[in-house]
Length: 145
Image (cartoon, rainbow, N blue to C red; front, side, top):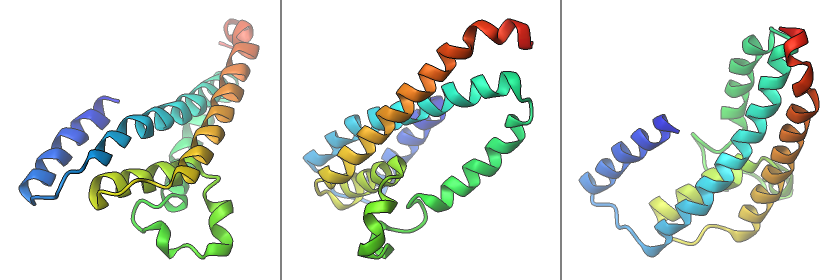
């Protein structure tokens, strides 16, 4: 989160420098950030619990993050995704979040609420499963270490 907040400050300076028009939809950053944190915490709970039992998880995570960079619209827009694949593509919660950030900040329009709802529900399920798994195996951490 510290990196994220530093990046936000730098990004705000860049937006001011290039005179990007800020609209009221910038407030959508707050729920987008909440969904992003919910998804990230779910993955962290699951990966940290797995790392206790399987030490190779720390080597797999950078590979998974790299694949995630291509699976989310970071260097490309969701407009490039064909409509017949868009519903399945938006099951990736970060796709909806990144698209929402892009629309709210750069375009100054309301993000697609359907995509945000999908992102929220998938993130919530991942959080519940990750937290549940963490709590389920928590008592055996001392035995594994």
